[in-house]
Length: 312
Image 1 (cartoon, one colour):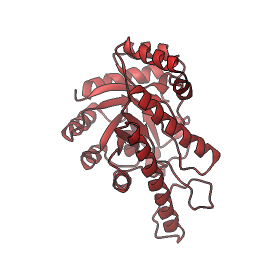
Image 2: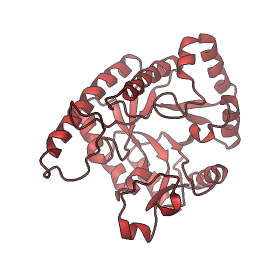
Image 3: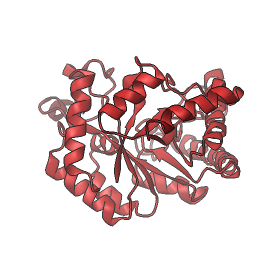
């Protein structure tokens, strides 16, 4: 495994400044947003697709530093029945087009979340039993029909353009948020679809990412190096569901934290060891979203922890 980094954490830097910063940290691979709701500060997809000279210059900056693109990220909700959802969908297809031009074989995405019916416009994440009330089961079934139809179409488009892996991040609030939902989508669509295993999202729902890695053998296409912490005392009172904004970290029952500030290093060593046993030898892309400390402190803390635990 090799360490990469999601570059939105350096959104205040220009493309070349970001590359120099990442290189100074001892990292040679970058995951950049090229679609969806990410910053897209370092990868202007529309510009690179329309101007061959800018595309060439973009690639040359990577080459002269001995760096590479780990994946292009296009995480968003393309299933939202709205103008915004349509724009997300369009940006995802453009991301695939750019990946083809760049020779990038892997994109990272999220499954999306439809509305509850053909006449609804508000995405609904159904987390309670669908046995009651009576309207939940039809809504849940409808959502899966919409989700599967979109991903069959998108997977076919991506395959025609040389994409080998679509790594879907299991994210709370989308149709794929667990091992079971990941496998459901994969089995209903195409093996080009696998998981971007982000352990932090499993942690905050009470799942064990190490056990999940075993269950996902053969379809782990990407891994995010990201930690989370269930906040003692607060979660004991209110449980683990948390609607507060991530900026209100002091009052939340869980928070994304720098690697090693949620799970200890022994846990992370076991996690990467099991990933290796399950056949994963790809990139571990640091996604730093800790708002309890400065960006610099969070990045350095996470790199230190990952360098000590990753299975190289």
